[in-house]
Length: 276
Image 1 (spheres, rainbow, N blue to C red):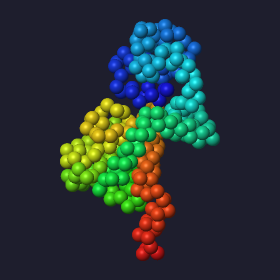
Image 2 (spheres, helix red, strand yellow):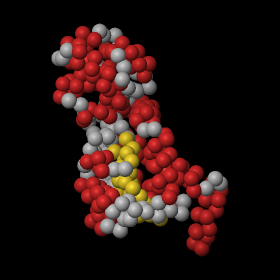
Image 3 (spheres, rainbow, N blue to C red):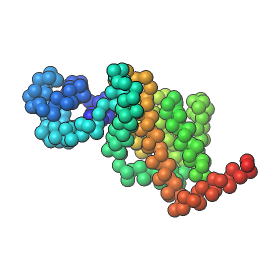
Image 4 (cartoon, one colour):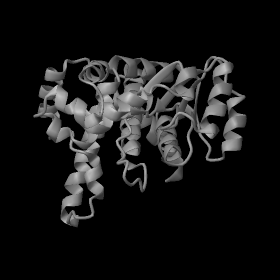
C-alpha cells in the first residue's frame, strides 16, 4: 500500500502530499491512530484524510488501517538499504525485500491482460524499435537482444541522435518501446513522438501514469519508483522493475510466436552453428 502512495505521489495536490508524507513517515503509527490524530499530525482535516484514502486506496480510513497493517511487513521500505547502521550481512535480505516489493507493486499497477495484449502487438510487429538512455538504455538493450533471439527484428542504439533518425523509419506495421522512468526524457520523448506520428504502436514503460510520454502512448506499463527519497545513488529498484516487465513481455512474445520453446531454441542454435 505504501508503494501505491509513491506511485501517485507526483500527481497529488499540495494538500494531499501533506497526508501522503505523513503516511510515508509514520506508517507504523497510522495503524493505531484515529483519523483525527492523523489529520492533526499532517496539518489537515479529517475530511481531507478521508478523501485521500478513498482517492489513493479506494477504501475507508478504517479499512485502510487494516490493509496497511496486513501489508506492513511485505512492504517494508526499500530505503532501509541505505541505513548505514545496517551490518553488511543484513544488506542481501534488505535488497531481496526491495526487489520483491517492486515486483509485487508492478503486478498491482498493471493488468496481466494488458501485458498479454502488448506482447501480442510486439509479436505481430514487423520491426520493434526501442528507445532509452542511461539505466533505461541498459534495459532496452537487454530486451533487444532477447527479441533478436526470438527471430524478431529489433533495433536499439546508444546514440540518441541515431535513435531519433531511426524513428523516422517507423511505419504503421512497427512497434516502439520507449523506456523512461520520468516520462520526460527528451532523448526518448522526441523519437517516440516521431514514431507515433508515423503510425507505429507506442508502448511506454514509465514510473507514473501522468507524463508526456504516457500521454502520447497507445499502451502504458507502470513500474513503481520505490527509490528512497533521502539518498538516491542509482535507480536500482526502478531498474529491477523494468527488467521484470521486459522479461514478462519476452516470455509473452515467445509463447505467441510458438507453442514449442524447443523450436525457438533450435532456430537460434542453427543461426550460430557457423561460428563453431
